[in-house]
Length: 194
Image 1 (tube, rainbow, N blue to C red):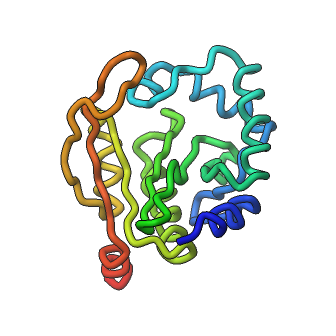
Image 2 (cartoon, helix red, strand yellow):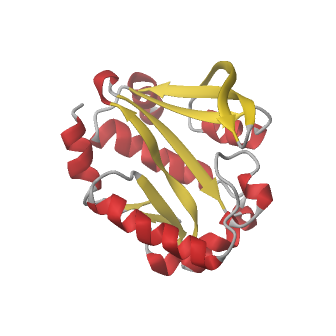
């Protein structure tokens, strides 16, 4: 996979849809919805970023992302829960390893929507896009040790737990153990046939 393809695809982020969700570009109008969950310490406990301090911070962040989208250098979708017409989180790619046809995915969801299978639904759509549209061979996801619910999401979409990388990331001043799960294109296709 070539970097140029990534830039080309993501500079015009395609909208994706599932039964309950629309995955689309994040926009400044999402600031209130995003702040609702991004300001919560329980949401960011196992993430690399700190809670958003105020709505202005969230709005400025979304303005910044607009420029990143235009350059084809941001690979995350807003997750919109259609029954409520509300942006409730994000799901998408966090990194590409083009030489190896490999990518990493991540997601975050408003706690008011936890336990409904929404993260699984969104992640399945992103995996489909990665394997079918981008031609990836491997997609992986990482979680901080202790974030069992995130690992369950990964396993529900067919990812295999591959182990813990000890003190692999410096997060908020602490070296964290990081779990890795992954799915290969051949495994994803086999699941799709079932």
